[in-house]
Amino acid sequence: MLIGFYTINMTFFVKAISGPKPKTKESQQIAYAYALLLVVVLFCQLFTFDDFLPLIENLWLPGGEPTAHLLGGIIVVSELFSLPFLLGVRLSPLMRVFCMIASWLVPTVWLFISVWLQIVLNNVSNIGFLGTVVDILPGWWAIFACIAIGVLSAWSSWGLWPLKRMKPGRRRLK
Image 1 (cartoon, rainbow, N blue to C red):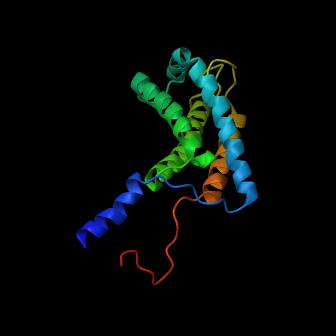
Image 2: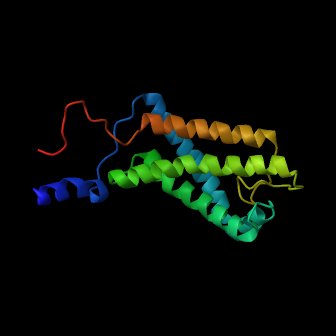
Image 3: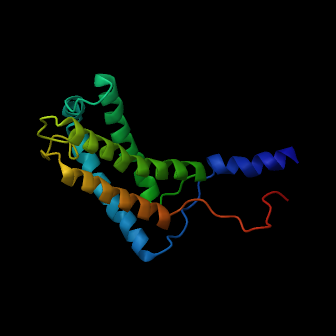
């Protein structure tokens, strides 16, 4: 009994399975478009990563330099880890959920930074969406862009939701 319970539940952590079929064709296309956007942003940020962290430091975030380095790392890592979920790579269910949450984290952190820059009124010439490759001015448009990216993330998560719902009255263990 205990060995069967262990075997069934541990497959959630280690067994790689294909992602669920998308709910609609449009949700798959949205996920691919969001993945393409993240690849472009990630490539630009990593291409100039030595300048990206000082750029985040210049945004005068609360907590100073440690917070800036933490947010810079969170941004890049969450952009990278969201790609396997969006592209439907074979993953364990736990990793698929982690990658989906990483795809939510990207617009959330950028929205925090955009709103922070609007509140502080910092004289910054680049918000850092594309690292230091292209200077992008902060402003209200950046907040709306982050909300639009959040909509892409939510739509992708809805269409590629990794967890299956159990039917009522059905038990997992036999």
